[in-house]
Image (tube, rainbow, N blue to C red):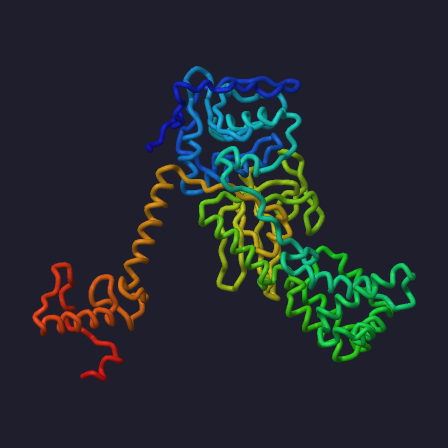
Length: 503
């Protein structure tokens, strides 16, 4: 559909939109009526520039939808300027698609700093609607859940949290037993005389867990010989030294190996080699931060984000209250968030893209709804990256390891596709399925993309084509004519090698 400055939402004659009251105002604030077009151009992510309202999650969710190929059309079809001082919008709220009417006005105040997004009116109308629907005001909006906004924009079909793969201390799905064994190995195993009677049974079970995972050849040996050698070595002050290392925000496999090399001289060599090999085999630690080396879980998570974006699923992320890195500098203009190397704490971002460069570094592109400020990197002499602030660009390519600890919350919404694009996608799927059928022999089902079975006739492999030719030749020799539906004899047939014995 062509762009319409008034919006493309069709309001059924039988529908009476629900009127939403303007959010309550604070001191020295008032509403100013807006007379301009709500869509001066087709929506774009650059229209979204968060003001002083603490609604970064709303802004990030909207931008993540607009960024996708069908996003601009979807947004334009959600709203309609009724030319009577109101805008009607269709949102999924209270578990149903509803029509809402919002006054075409924005808040103005005497205090410096614009409250609303510094962009077209359509963004401001969505801001107001979501504030009212959540029972919030301009003064009480201090953050929320982007999933709620994605659901309101796109519907309830499929949305949620991708989870996160943060630092080395988080257990990955399906590997709890390995992490439990490592936890016992480094924290809970003491000498037999160090346990109270009530603790000895738990200690024995811990030894069994470690033995089954790290020293499986000793399963059934109640003396736990290798575990005992480990305990005798580890209890000589090393427990405290490892605890000091582990308290760091990021511990890499290199840190663990360095710890073992530095202090492992007193440990039985077989036990030393077995433990180190086991830790490396199961990738219980990530690689050194910003080194461009990644565990299988990190790459899997990276691939998952890429697939969601390829499926036109909007993705948003959020930072925690405290960020890793040097001391926070300055603060955000919306909620006073702290900032470290261009990234704000307690702040939501849109996810736009993924890439992997020639040096093997993986990146996820995020966009700051403020409309400015991001993070960049400089290459160090040892090949690692150093984060630094990128002031003017709102879009940042965040290195994967950095991304996973900076954004522990990753959310997604339903597919952002219009009805026309959905129909096109369905036609494409049907065409692909039909093409797949055409690439299989209609007689024996063999793959026709294989050069050894390439077709002589459409839809039939050369082996079946030759057999068909032989049958038709034999029929002709006995005066039996082929039916009118039979295919003509293949030109210059290339019989399969196994048929050569008959000639």
